Every structure is written in structure tokens, then in C-alpha cells.
Amino acid sequence: GQNIDQPTEMTATEGAIVQINCTYQTSGFNGLFWYQQHAGEAPTFLSYNVLDGLEEKGRFSSFLSRSKGYSYLLLKELQMKDSASYLCAVRDQNSGYSTLTFGKGTMLLVSP
Amino acid sequence: DGGITQSPKYLFRKEGQNVTLSCEQNLNHDAMYWYRQDPGQGLRLIYYSQIVNDFQKGDIAEGYSVSREKKESFPLTVTSAQKNPTAFYLCASKEGGSRIQGRGELFFGEGSRLTVL
Image (cartoon, rainbow over all chains, first blue to last red; front, side, top):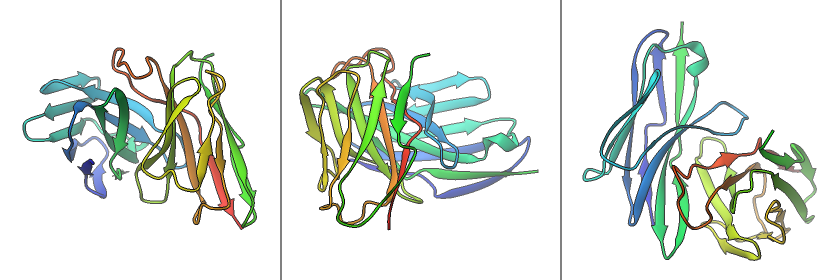
């Protein structure tokens, strides 16, 4: 099975930087995803890491260390619209089937 | 525009009734998935299908059933055997089936919120 841990809630101020951590334990690791989900809506894809290192995309960056089973999502220049739940998900490839297992999500509240 | 359409968006059901949630995609994706989300919880996998006429149980398949007769469609039936069916249900798809193509990220529908009265 898989175990994915991320903080339940975080708060930050508009314009600031916030880092959301995710740790995981899995066999057959084949990639880590971050999704953003606003309340009552579908998750939308933010970033993908399969090799160690940092992937940057605009205000959002994601880091992966496979040896440590660790990732983080970095959000810069926070805006009010960034208030949402951020889901860490790990892809597991076993026996020819690939599935995505999600963490419980981190609710980020951005205040003025 | 390509995408995933789930219907209905809101559904109310009496205890003991079966209900079917629709999921249709025109992205030409091979793989489709059903997830359930409860308040404060992450997404939990119910069923998935990597190819037409084949599907696999996920982590919480009990009380649910699916079919995959067409590539575009992957309906989920919530049966009366599901003890706590009130939840937000999300359908997703991915290109490439069991193969990983590109990032292989999931694309989600807008969700169906089921409430049992």
C-alpha cells in the first residue's frame, strides 16, 4: 500500500511565500503530482515530478527527492485566489496497472 | 472543446435505492477512474478501467459497480449495499491506458454530489 502525509491546514499572507510538504511511502514509484482544488470543484493539475530536483512553472514550483520520499510545493507571491486545497498524489506502477493515490490535502488560507 | 462530463451534478437518493452516475469523455483517453471524496479527506479510488471491457477494483470498491462498454463512457452505480454513500464523486481520465504517456496526469470532471436522505 501507500502512505502519503501532508499538513492539514496552512495559513499565509497575500504576497508571501508558502511551502507545502508531502512525504510518501510506496513501492513502484512512478511520479508525483500536485493538484489544486477549490471548494466544491474538481482538482486541477499543477505540477509533476518524476526525477529528483525542482520543477518551476510561474509562481509555482515543485521539488522531489525520491531517496527521502519527499516533495514540496512552493507558492510565491501569494494571491487571494490561491486559497484552496492542495493535493499531493503519487503514481504507483505495479503489474502493468498505473494508479494515482492521493494524500488528504492541505487547506491553504491566504489572508489580506 | 474536449473534456469530461459528469451528470448529474447534484443527486438525492433515498436509502435502499441504487443510483447511477454518468461520466463521458471526448478526450480519446484509454483509462478512466472513479474517486470518492469526503469532507477533509483526499480522493479514494473506487474503480478504474485501462481499456474497454476491462476494469479493476480500487481501494474502496465495496457497494459500487461499473461498466466500460464504450471508450467514452464509464458509469458508476452506487448500490444499496454501500453503507455510507453520501459523498462527492469525481470521474477522471488519462491517455495511454496502462502505459504512461507524457506526464500521464489525470483530467477530472466537475464532480457529482450524492446525498442520501
